Length: 157
Image 1 (tube, rainbow, N blue to C red):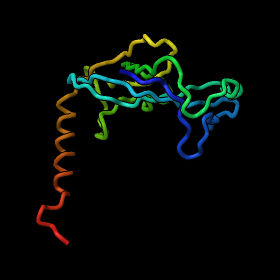
Image 2 (cartoon, one colour; image 1 turned 120 degrees about the vertical axis):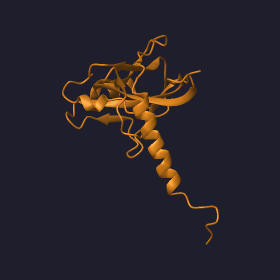
Image 3 (cartoon, rainbow, N blue to C red; image 1 turned 90 degrees about the vertical axis):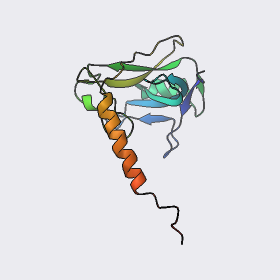
């Protein structure tokens, strides 16, 4: 079951409406939602999905957004084989965990972004990556590194 979409204040400044660093006439509000997702292996997971709602600063302020405010609708996940942002395509690359490896489908990178919609019945658009062997190898290396730095049971101070 998915939770309601909630407005979230900036952890550092406490601001709900944030001014764009590129143009002070624009801003954005950060929102998040706890979602039930099924991963590529069919495993159910609860994840917090977030996105930004951009707009003219004056219009965002007129909406009266506040921290913790619940909104109707859903945060959608959209995946694509073409970049969402041609100028900075690397911003939207789908990366597997903290491996740094880009998820791919038939050798092409998968791009991922989130977007708020007021339509609660909107469906996610997902692409199942197929570079599984590359990811398994990366996870095995990570697992070996983490085991190598663990102290033995006999270690005592």
